[in-house]
Image 1 (tube, rainbow, N blue to C red):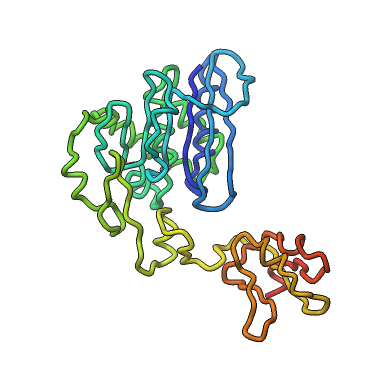
Image 2: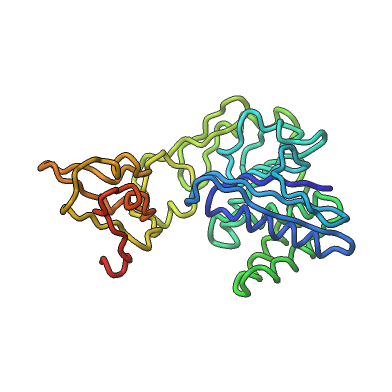
Length: 305
């Protein structure tokens, strides 16, 4: 069995890549695949994991993968100091990075750069799908293209096939070989990452991009995920389909809604009344459930506007 553990952030397509890899594996004669995700907080930019299992017989084990043959990091900031603990002996980790990290078990691929140049957006998942189809036994990039054709919308086929072709060219040029230990460290430490970000900082052999602190256009923000906690550039991020509406009648200011709100959007005004900051409220409805007096009702966002 070949097991692949995917690390990504919400919006990067980690689960899509896991499914496509499972589909590519099952398209080969006598091969079977299984893919499933594991989400924490389901929001854009939140860390999540996905799993792919490939075998020559039906895969019935749906347990999470603790140690994998391949571990993929769609976001370099998810690469922690204990990353080797998730690898099987002889396994390989792949990370979305322009840095020559210099470890024989860690392959850096500029997946963001490839996807931006072809797709026009930083969606690195197809790059790693193609890379794994080249690196893992029993897979092929032709099967990857067929999986894309079967599971992606038709309008996405051509450009994602072009991503696969770009990875094939990269492999032909020797770009799918882990860098030798210590190679290019000085050059990597002195370079800047794409998008005008500040130079990266090295810590325990892992490069962590310095966080942006300038004001960003939402179109720029949508192409990256490495920002300070609480750093919002798109109000409400478009998530809300219903908003909580607070009625002062019957409200005792018990503050249960305030204490339960996961984003701290409920506050007291200068005259002591409770209010909701709709700029940051995501419409989860927790406050409405926490109110024991029925003072908060969820209303459809369109109607409320």
